[in-house]
Image (cartoon, rainbow, N blue to C red; front, side, top):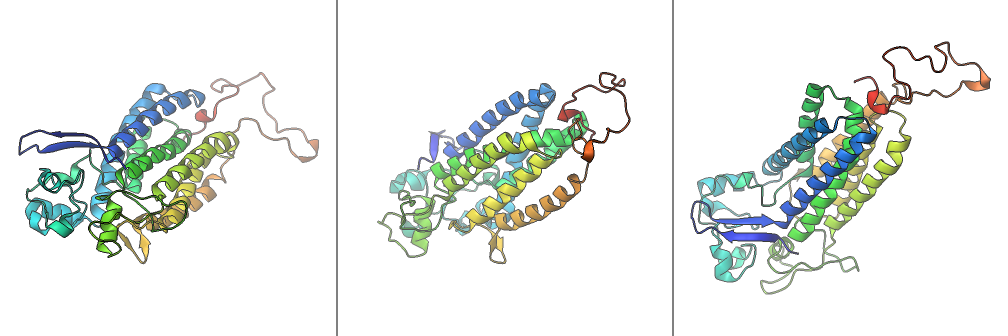
Length: 355
């Protein structure tokens, strides 16, 4: 666990301490790698690279905003953000970072003020902008998917890009980007799994989110180390790498209709996320015995099933049709080499009819 890459105490009360988290660095690295892959992959799909770079920028900005907003609204911390602005003494969020760093320095806590449960350390300064602190943690992937997806749809329509070829190109790269984010979660210590005595268990240090959660549950005392937990962050990162490889190396080369890579990517990630959520033990929002991500995942699976049914009934994107049974002659049309004006022989999938 190495939650902070850079920390600087500005000395100004209005600015406080500036920290750049490992999570933010990992997400930024994922965006850079994803943009590079998208730029390289665009050539194969005959997509304009300038449009693709603009698309990547829109998705990055809207994705970060959407992920942050969904975290604030549905992860169960909304009132904590309200209290830190109106009355910090009411804050009971044990992973709250004190902006001045006073509690951390006073009690020798390197990164968090989670010890306030035992030493009475609570935030003392108002901060009405904590909810939009992009350098700290507090992101929800599905919020990023919704925000980035809406931005992508708007730009695709404005630039008149082919919808499904563009979305297919984005799909596996976005899933790969999630793997970078989960590595950041592991370094930050959040999104941890259940207590385990198996060989898969990892132990986070004192002051970590797992340490606080175990202390609240009475599993350990103030001076104890947290119990070994399942590294669900790494489970999801591995799942995302596998899904991205499957989409890029198999589905993209054998898909039966434009949009299949997108449908398969969302469905596979939703299924993997639903399963992994059962092994997570960190506090997060939910309802009906399911976490927020599981509920969104079930909705996504249903939506992808409907979309698969509709798109699979469209004509195949391949310009070469299979011969009819029995060796019957192909339908009447211009002879080979006699291509009507406006049609390009061997047109790429990116030139299919816009949807």
